[in-house]
Amino acid sequence: ESKIAAICEQNKNKAVEFTQKLPYSVKIYNDLDTALKDPEIDLFDVLTPHRFHEEHVIKIAEAGKHISCQKVPALTLSSFDRMTRAAEKAKVKFRVFENFRYHPPYLRALELVNDGVIGEVHTVNFRMWGSENPISGWDIPITSWKWRIAENQNYKAPTLFDDGYHKHSMIAMFFGDLKEKITAVRTWSNHQRVSKVIKWDTPAVIIYETNKSYKYGQWSTSISKNFPIKSDYYGGDEFLEIQGEDGLIFV
Image (cartoon, rainbow, N blue to C red; front, side, top):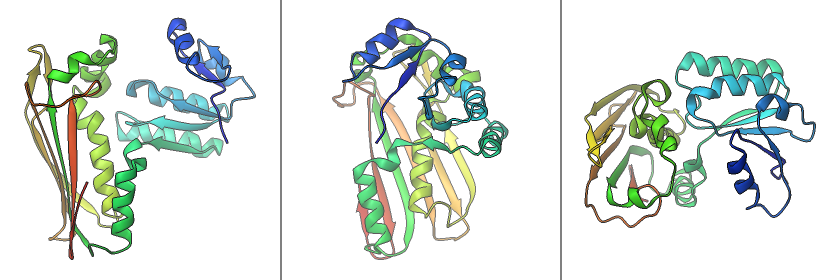
């Protein structure tokens, strides 16, 4: 059993607002160095923007605490290597949290695949489509959007790099976590102006080649202004198709 022992947040009002939703009392820290000295905290969940992950993960590892880091874990492979080396050196557990892998429909699909219901997996296809209309109904500070469309924080790629992590992860999962080696990734990408202001990295098509000629993965995304999606969250929806030698799964 676990519970939240503390929250570390520079904005005190935000921290108080969050802790008030919990059924028990929680400490509030305004800086990471102070929080790391708390002996009651065993594990830190890193929820900061991507560009801070390396700094925070290494600092937490050196303090001897376990780490769960929100996807995307790092902006470069070398950065991620430094994070993993720090965790290994400190002998602490370090994981990247990717919530699609715990989504019940995907878990059920994986169970069917592992049970051999559709035979050997040949293709994994993700299709995502979006709409501008629901976005205005999502109550989120503009600062939370700004870093997602910045070059030095998210490569101006909220779809392909940030949300795309989920799709990359699913395609790897249904191919047995790279049991079938992905040998190349090919991308066609363009952009649209969302709300006539934000340059969004969509439409796009990504193809994953494997070491077997009859196996591949793909995901594609597009967005339309008036597409009828009802949501008070992200203005998007998606489906997953897994084709096997003996059958097909739609999620």
